[in-house]
Length: 95
Image (cartoon, rainbow, N blue to C red; front, side, top):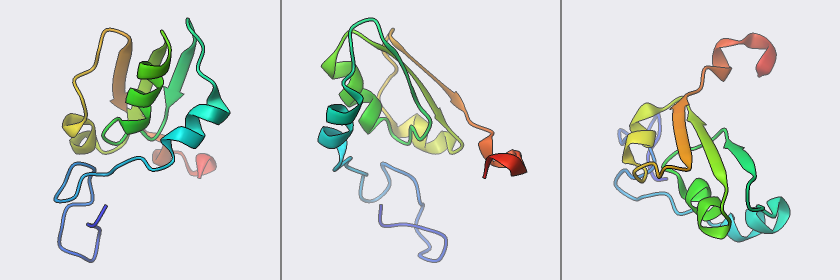
């Protein structure tokens, strides 16, 4: 991402320079998605890692992100994916 709080540009994936998940290969190697598995992407953003998981195996992915603008810029959810808001930062114990 090229944006952020001090840049004057939106800090969302898919903005002026879309986020490209450069660690997707390593993530898949460590996660080893299996057919029938259910995975949670708690930093969904624009869905790059979720798409990689869905493309690897017959899985289901639940995507969560606080920034619904970023989620809206992501791919259309396939039948095996659901997404929603994350309220993690509203709980001081989860920081």
